[in-house]
Amino acid sequence: MKLILSSGSDEECAICLDSLTVPVITHCAHVFCKPCICQVIQNEQPHAKCPLCRNDIHGDNLLECPPEDLACDTEKKSNTEWTSSSKINALMHALIDLRKKNPNIKSLVVSQFTTFLSLIETPLRASGFVFTRLDGSMAQKKRVESIQCFQNTEAGSPTIMLLSLKAGGVGLNLSAASRVFLMDPVSCFIDFVVCYYFFKKKKRKKKKRTKSTR
Image 1 (cartoon, rainbow, N blue to C red):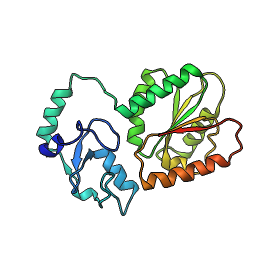
Image 2 (image 1 turned 90 degrees about the vertical axis):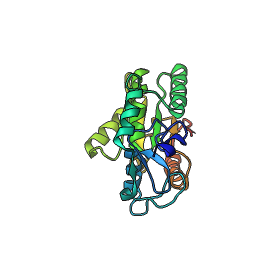
Image 3 (image 1 turned 30 degrees about the vertical axis):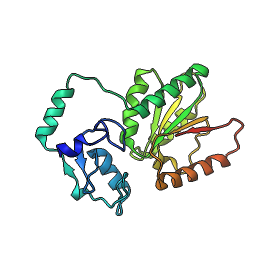
Image 4 (image 1 turned 180 degrees about the vertical axis):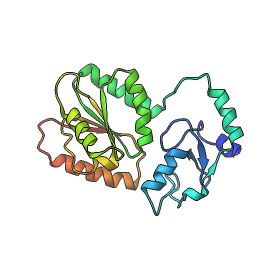
């Protein structure tokens, strides 16, 4: 386990692109955060694929890091603060730059991984952004409230929506957004859903231009 972890890229999860949390190894020898890979398996049942090599993966075959290894890592990191990934840093740089140019511009931050969306909440709060969220775990009433809040153009309304790609591909009206940030690695699955998502978005009659960023 230690050998495989040490051969990874700075011990980062390829799904959330952050430091490994509760690391597990697949039978194809790739390491992910346990919550991240379990969500992939759940979303893609019954034929889940490894995000890196596209081999079949199953929850029963995940090998978890021994407690003594986790304890060692925890001791090393106990006095350090939350650190961001390069992808989150790039997102925050772009959002802050947009806010300087136009404080009222609204953006969608899209990912199929809700764990990754949760990670993004920390720097958004630290930078003083007002944001809302829409994902599959929310009740219908909460989803409607989140959309209405984001669509509101009054001062103080959210300028950012953290959007689960799966929850967002259901014909929602999010026309207030003029920027879309796609946070997931490019894959056939993502490309298919993204094309469908933007096809519906382009059908709306909008005067302002919408720009997407990967």
